[in-house]
Image (cartoon, rainbow, N blue to C red; front, side, top):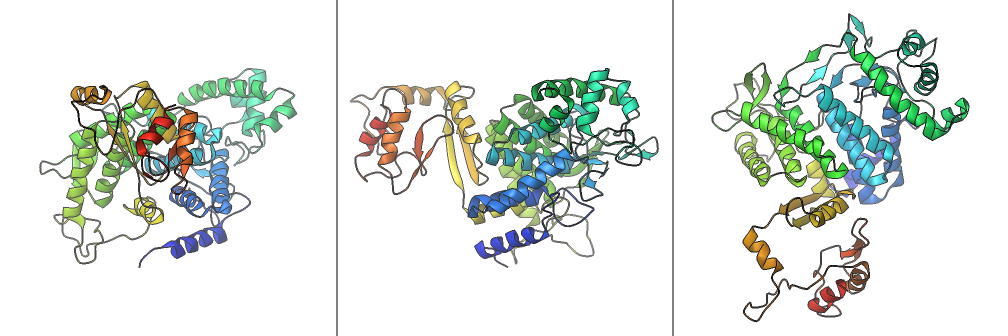
Length: 499
């Protein structure tokens, strides 16, 4: 079936009917983290301006991150919550869940500017780098719920255990904020969660909010160190191409939006590992790797998630080689998985071992269908194409990229061009009589100013203008020069933008 605006509004209505207004999420327990649904709601909010779409997304993200399903000591999310309140998780942690949730929290941060979403994103990515990255740079699949034969034992606390780690005042602060009590909140022990706002807890304790925040930050480090001395849950050390693709993309976006180089560096290392160790001799991919052995033919999601991750890497400031590799994998996906008759994609490649039926997915499962959100982005608005031209690492190029990264643009297509020395010299050279003028660009001295770009924007009222991040500058929604000839010459308008 075709999907248009009516179907998207119908989806929004369905989410509204199933939304749990009391605790966030959709439906009843058990509750799984609806990362893809939240990303869709943010897109629907952008498209239709529906405040309820944003409220559902925001309320669910806040409730999950304040509940026990979020690891308040070490970062990262458990697989799902067994109750409506997000308090009691199934304590297993899955790589794909955390990758999808990182992107959802990043997008929510872009939409709202809420520092809470920034913090959850950072803590989750830092957990991945600290605990889930293999020495070879690939990323492990999951950790178990059990340790020493008991589910959740690694993650729960009693006041006595906290007192063994923290001094009296730190313990009082920690227990009050993270709901650690003698009676417990689950089977006589306490799962750390934050049911009360920090300001309310600070008032009850008779301390300033800032003081409580500092105390909690120091206490978390001590509690985490103590927890690391416990028997740890089992580690599933398989490295799966598709799941690594999801996390590589999340890390790349973490760098692009938050400006953290360590995320880009980890993403590039993981991508290099996958392309080196899980590539077949014929150019295809393997699905899984463990202890030096890659095996099993990759399926559709492996190619789709990895190629999208490589595009994310490129757009986050990585090498053009990532984009070229993404293009190669996309071509391979088209050749090996496309059903020419229907235009849909099979889950398995044409050279895969013969199955009773060659299956096709059409809906999301624990992970999204391979082309879901990219398709929605194009259906909603079509692409926004952005070109950054400048020397990699230069301050002015970085300022432009940061300004764009502040904005929620899920349908963006970004290109970065670092011109060779000869081209850069031409761009910097002043115009002279020996070089004929072009019809698309002129060289003007100086730089754009807020006053100049405001005057420029006044001349393109029909196509509209918008603020360029926090630079104070204004630009046409279709780019400088897009409204040529409306009220004055392009040269005049560009000159005014610089003065």
